[in-house]
Structures are given as structure tokens and as C-alpha cells.
Amino acid sequence: MYAIVKTGGKQYKVTEGLIFETELLHADVNSAVELEVVLAADGDRVVTGSDAANAKVTATVLEHGKGKKINIFTYKAKKNIRHRQGHRQPYTKLKVESITLG
Image 1 (cartoon, helix red, strand yellow):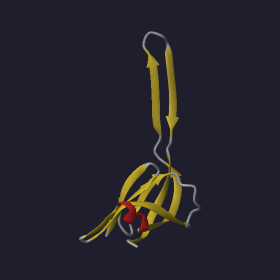
Image 2: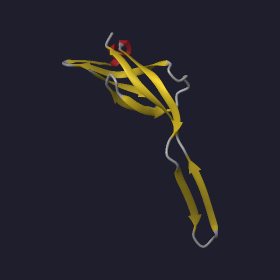
Image 3: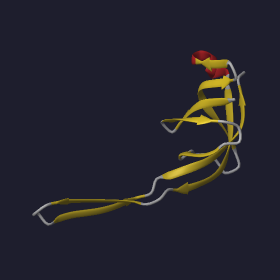
């Protein structure tokens, strides 16, 4: 059984027990989060559209963190203009607990 869930502007294929990272969610650590289901499948049965709204995917928040640092460097040749900037994307690590078709 698997499901396609939408969170943080992206879609992820998840199965029970899967641990994955997504965009930062404002939820406490060890709390349960219900994710929006786009598609769910169990063997030969596939649920999409309005039927997928009845399906549920619950996940537990394991931790919050920041990703690897990305260095951004821009310059303009012959103008002595140089800008350096760094960025670390925040994320939430989730563990899928259950998938129900409803």
C-alpha cells in the first residue's frame, strides 16, 4: 500500500514506516500530523480525486532542522561588485504511521 501526499508545495510517494524530509511544518515534535492525500493505492485498488479526500495518511513529527548550507556568490565583471550570501533551508522530518483508504 502506498499513497501520494501533498505537503509544502511538493508531492511525495509514501509507504507505512517511511521516514522523509519535507518543508518546515509548524507542529510540535512527537505530534501527529495528517497529510493531504492526492492518490492512494492498495494492490489493484487505486483511489484518486474526491475519493482520495476520504483517505488518510497520518505521520509523526520526528524533528525539525536545517539543511546543508548553500553559498550564493554573484559578481559583475570589471565593476568590482561582489555579493556573498548563504542559505540553509529549514525542514521537518516525518515518519508515516498509517495509511487508510477510508
